[in-house]
Each structure stands twice: as structure tokens, then as C-alpha cells.
Amino acid sequence: MESFSTKDIVGEIVAKNYKTAKIFKDNHIDYCCNGKRTIADACASQNIDEAKIIEELNRVQSTENSAATDYNSWPIDLLADYVEKKHHRYVEEKIPEIQPLIHKIVSVHGNRHPELEKIAELFKETSGELTKHMKKEELMLFPYIKNLVKAKENGAIPAPPFGTVANPIQQMMHEHDTEGERFRQIAQLADNYTLPSDACNTYRVTFQLLKEFEEDLHLHIHLENNILFPKAMQLENELQ
Image (cartoon, rainbow, N blue to C red; front, side, top):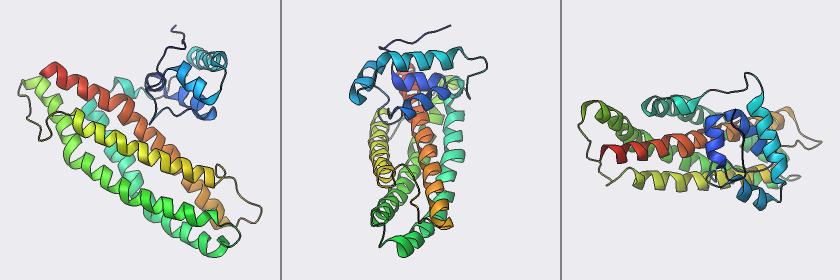
């Protein structure tokens, strides 16, 4: 059975077994937007003992039936469809649910908790930018990735309007970084979604939904940055 070393890449580890994501998250190591680092570099940035992380990763790896959904084995056209239908739809459904709840707790609790105003502002920015980001993927990038898969079968290489798939991927990853940073700020302002003593039920529901939204975003970005995008670039190179 494979054991880990400090030279292993964080995002690649999570791509092979998503259950390892919890270890990195618990240790405040970004595996989605900043997943190209080695374990050594990631631990150094957080002043964490490398041996502790390696031990925890090996424990997860050796646990019977520990493997989560093996997204890494999926065809990339299937993965693109999954991201769109699962994660894009989730974002589209949750934004109109969360926004009015945030506005409500700002109006009721904003005087005692001024950080809520900034959380509302950041989530509004995320709502607009993430929606535009997803549409660019759905209308431009994902159709081209699916055409690459077809080209592997029939030999007809598609002519992309953007030169190479690496160009839109670079832009999408930059936008992922922006959204990841925005939600880091939200989580920090919300004290990692810790409820204050005067929180009402709406406050509780809002923080729970924000936490779930962030967790879904992490998986969403991970699937693209660490699996879909590298494989799309590799396939395009093979075809050329």
C-alpha cells in the first residue's frame, strides 16, 4: 500500500482519495486553490509538523474501505457534467436562499455584530462573480473539454477559439483563487461560523448554510483544479 512522503503534492493526494481532504482542512492547509504545493511546503507555511500530517494521511490510506468517491477515475466529460449538474446547480439554488437570510441577520444583529455587514458584502460579491464564472465554464470551457474526448475517439481535433485550453483554465483558476480568498475572509469574520450567545434561529441557519456553501465550494474547486483541468490539458497535448 502506498505511503506518503513530504514531496507528495497536496492536491494530487486529495484527488486520489477525497477523505484526506479533512486532514488538510483540519490543519488549515488549502488543498483546492493552492493544492500544487508539496506536503513539506504546505506544512512549512502553517508551521505544522510534517510527520504528524504524514502519519494521519497514512492512517486514512490504510483504513479498510476508506476511499471516498474516486473522481480521479472518471472520464473527464463525465466529470465536467457532474460539476455542472451537481456543484453549479447547488450554487444557483443556494445563493437566493442565503442572501435574504444574511440581510435579515444584518438588520437585526448588525449593531451588536458589525462583522455581519462585511460578510453580507463579501457574499454578494461571490454571488455575482461566481455566477458569471460558472456560465463561462458552461458555455465555453466545458463544451470544448467534451469535444476533446470526442476527438480522441474520432480523430477530429476541435479548433478552440482561445488558442489552447490552458488559456481559459488559467483564467478559471485565477477566479477560483479570488473566490477561495473571499470565503476565507467570510469564515474568519464569522469566527469559523461560531455562533454568538445572542444568536437567533435565523442566525444559526445562515451560518450553517454559509459553512455548507464553503465546503461545497472547496470540493467544486478541487475537482476542477486538481483533476479536470490537468487532465484536459494533458488530453489536448496528446491529441496535438
